Amino acid sequence: MARRPGAPAAHGEEFTFVSPLVKYLLFFFNMLFWVISMVMVAVGVYARLMKHAEAALACVAVDPAILLIVVGILMFLLTFCGCIGSLRENICLLQTFSLCLTIVFLLQLAAGVLGFVFSDKARGKVSEIINNAIVHYRDDLDLQNLIDFGQKKFSCCGGISYKDWSLNMYFNCSEDNPSRERCSVPYSCCLPTPNQAVINTMCGQGMQALDYLEASKVIYTNGCIDKLVNWIHSNLFFLGGIALGLAIPQLVGILLSQILVNQIKDQIKLQLYNQQHRADPWY
Image (cartoon, rainbow, N blue to C red; front, side, top):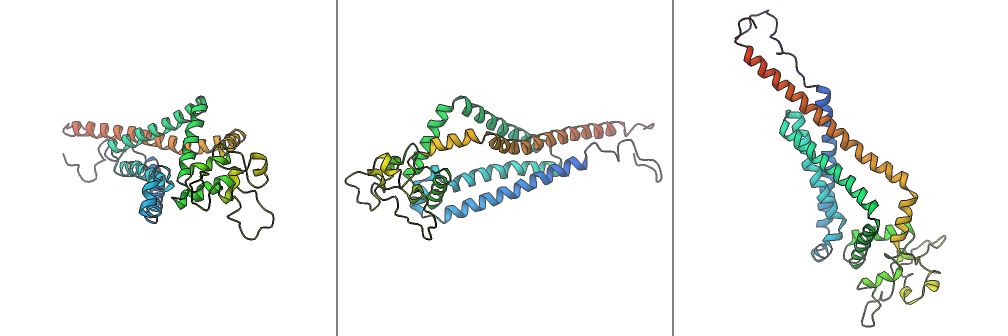
C-alpha cells in the first residue's frame, strides 16, 4: 500500500542493521590485499616467462616464482569473495571468505605447532628442500640468488656441510665430472675479504677436496640447517611478532565478515517483517 505524501515512513523502511563502517572497512581491507595478490601473480608470471623452458621445467618444485603465483592466486580468489561479498552484501560470498580465512589461519597454527612438536621431522623436511635446491642451483637464476643470499646471510655452506654441494652435477667430486667447478663450492660460501673491490667468484675452487680444518680458512664449513635452527632459537620473539602480524589481519577479516553477515541476516528479517505487515491497515 502506497504511503500518502507527508505521511511518516513505515517502520523499518529507512532503518538498516547493516553498518556502512563495517561494510566499507571490510571492502577496503580486502581491496588492499586483492591488489597485493595481483602484483604477486604478475611478478611470478613475469619471472617464469623470463626463464628458459628447460630450466623452468627442471626446478618447478623449488622455484620461488611458482610460490608467488600459487599464493597470489589463492589470495586473489579469497579477497575477491570478500570484496564482492561486502560490496553486494552477499551472505554466501562472505561466509565463503570467512570459512576459507578460518581454514588458512588454522592450517598456519597447526603447521607452527607440528613444526615445534615434531622438530626432528621438520628438520628432515627442511634438509630435503635444501638438498633439492642445491641440485637445481645452476638451473634457475632466482633460486641461485636465493641460495647465495641465504649462505651469505647465515654464514654457512650447503645443508649439513659444505660437502653437500657434491649433490650438484657441476660441483660433484666424481672423477668423470668434466665441469670446471668440479669439487668446488659457490662463491657465497667464501669468507668475506675486507676491502674487496671485485668479488672473486672462483674462491671456492676445489674446497670439497680439502678437510674441514683446511677448508675453514677459506670458506664457511658449517651447514645452513644448523645455522638456521640457531637463528630461529635466538629470534623467537621476532618470529612471534611476524606470526602475530600475519594472524591479526586474518582475525580482523573473520570478525568483520561475521559481523556483517549477522547484520545482513537481521536486515533480511526486518524486510520480511515489513512485507508481512504492509497489508495491515493499522501498519
